[in-house]
Amino acid sequence: MSRYPDFHSALIPALWLVQNELGYVPPRAMEELAEIFKIPPGHVESVLSFYTMLHSKPVGKHLLQVCRSVSCMLNGSDELVAEIEKYLGIKVGQTTQDGVFTLLTVECLGACGGAPVIQMDYDYHENMSWEKIKGLIESIRDGTPR
Image: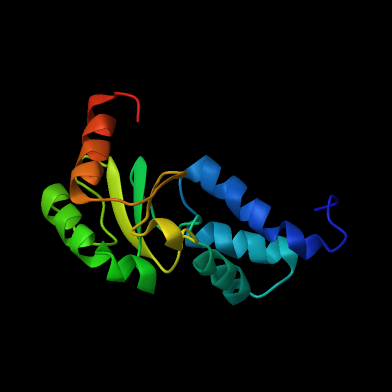
């Protein structure tokens, strides 16, 4: 907190630290951060829910996020989501039974020129097709480089 002119600016890094330790930010951690930062718990929750890189519930080892912005939707992201759901046997917001994949949709990944776009963990993949996504999923399952 001492690294920031306004100590409240340390909230996002603090949330990130909790998530790196626990895999997500549980309610008790939100309450503790609210106490530390002397802010309402609702404020912590609103910051947590705003950023797609922060999670309030456990996610799989690999996070697959599909952009649902207008550009991506017009280029087939809805169809890609349906194929992923069918292939992995989960719905958006769910994690595979083996805990490997969580599927989410996000408002915008900011790469409209490469629509449809997905983010697998921290890597962006543009101009995606079902074949490319399936290959990416299989490479993760097989442990081969992406």
